[in-house]
Length: 103
Image (cartoon, rainbow, N blue to C red; front, side, top):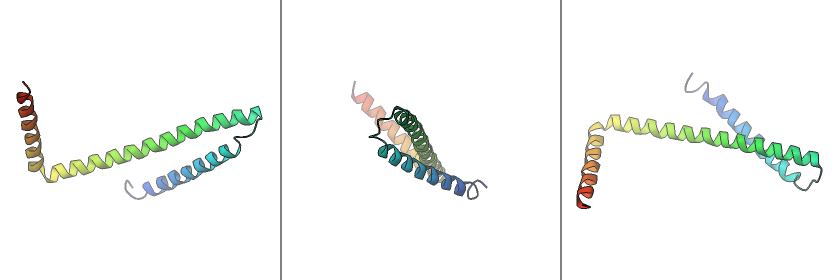
């Protein structure tokens, strides 16, 4: 259930929420010239809610990207463990050499 069954509806929900956000932005733009205080109040509340929703969706996307990069890095290090150890040792030697040289 982790890979296919759950991700498809979640992807659809994100797509639908994105469409709602675009429609709300269009509606906010269409009511920008209205001088009614009630419309301005609703407009301000809708803008705040929309910004929070968009920030939340963007945060979720960033978390997914970070998790994917972490999984790929973990997989690479596990597959190439000696190369990763050698790279870390080389970087450590370089930093040590630069620190000693700076004295």
